[in-house]
Every structure is written in structure tokens, then in C-alpha cells.
Length: 95
Image (cartoon, rainbow, N blue to C red; front, side, top):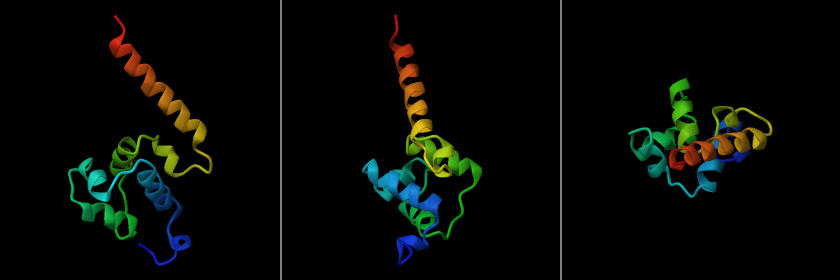
């Protein structure tokens, strides 16, 4: 990773923060991409640029909306995403 966290792109900072918040290792996150830990390391070190499809996978793995990575304040969209996911789970178990 960059020497100084201020040198890290804000999007990458959000990815790292959310990964840590969920207690995921780089290897665990890489599993969602069917890649090895080095893949996530390259993303976090800013030597790999995510494609749109990789952003979609990253969002799903980190349980956020894709817009989470780009918004100044994502709490509202994250709440909506969680409520929608909860509603889907409830529907699956409804008799």
C-alpha cells in the first residue's frame, strides 16, 4: 500500500475500510473474484484498476451498493441496500 494513507485514492480507501470493517482478509475477498490474494493486494496498492464488472463483484462481496465507492456519504444508500436485501430474505421464507 502507499506509504501515506492520504496518497491512496478515496475509492481504494473505501474498499480497504469496508474490507477491514467486515473483518475480511485480502484472501477472503479475492475468493469472490476467483483470484488469489495478490489480486486484492494489487487493487489496494493501486497497481490494478478495477473494471466495471469488478466493481460490481467488489460491491457484492463487501455488501454495499456500487455507488458506495464514489459517494461522499453512502450511509443512506447502504441502508436502502440492506433493507432491500433483508426484504428478499423475508420473501424467501414467507409461507
